[in-house]
Length: 166
View 1 (cartoon, one colour):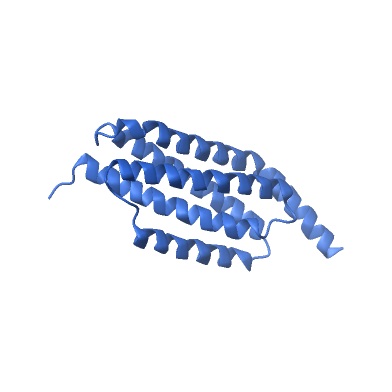
View 2 (spheres, one colour):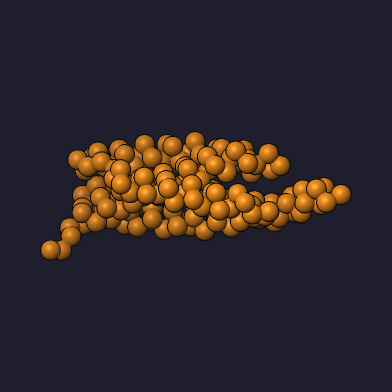
């Protein structure tokens, strides 16, 4: 049986909710280990607050469709996030691995929100456009910040490593 636009949209919202749960878990773990990188720590904490608001917006979109998030997808993504955080935590270059992974993850989120925005009208959910556009804007801002700071983070990492070696 073919899915309707609304069916595809609801699945996309549930996937986006699980994606944001994963992002929240990653940032919570990362923010605990960023003492040597205060600018990164501040921006991660800011985006963590944005992510919590994004989750609320997605829940509003789901409620408008008479639906709710998928607990199974949310739990699965939470486990994935914690596993990723643990894998990077044991690496001596954890900050670099996290920076690269976060850059990729932000672009994944951007694509997901662009897809949801494309589905809004076809799914009869045009009122959700502003909520999803706000999520997209925040993800684009975070991606731009990460991209602009890869060099800074790399230099800071090198300085930290050189201090340790001295």
